[in-house]
Length: 323
Image (tube, rainbow, N blue to C red; front, side, top):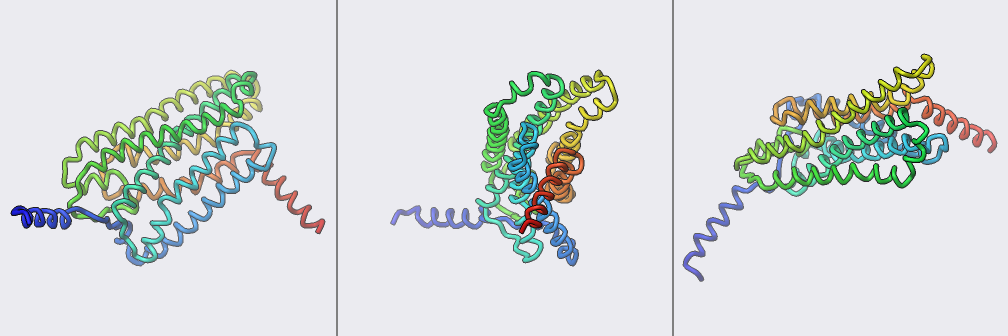
């Protein structure tokens, strides 16, 4: 046996003791008895969010009235919303009801990667949707020729490529950090800032990368979306007749509200990645409340969707009456 074996064994044993193998998601442990109430509220929100978005997807799929580029992007956004909440909320529900706060190292980083990928993808899909509305209002005669099915598919895929690429950068820089303990994350998900705060190595490069990715994923699309809406509003103001103006703006209002809610919450949470005590409460709004509202915004503010729902309900009533 080599002379240095005891020393090597001792170092290896010390390494295993100090390296974190799992994390503890503290979530909302401080709320104590209110955790059960929060569980039911989050569960109801999750069910409504998933049901509402599935309804939009089905409607767009089966109703000829909604088979246009705008509703194709809305249904794609609904798919993303379902995935977005499913990555985070079931783990939160398990944490609240069973007290199972443990998450393995691999599971933690996998959740972080998927969650950040979906978030960045949504940002760029909202940008694509703004481009679609700008083109429809400013170039109505060329709209059908430009927004062909293959172009719409490419525009829907592009945000995924951007989202996965940006999230990969965050994963690489965060995974290079060393975690020696403590392993308690003051959050209900594995997010970048709380993990950086637990690192026993210098997280400055990882934090710089987080800021750069946040600028590319949030600030950059926001600025372009604002530019598109300035262009859209200028075009609407030039339209003669209040009815025509109202009709033109109504095609953008749902997207504008959803974009404002989504980016407003994202800016608060991610442009200042400090990992403060309030981050998990802000994130709860961003990850639960905003996705919950989106299906209602697209149905209540959109006459085409309401008409499609009415048509579908009447069709089902007629089928039932004929039996």
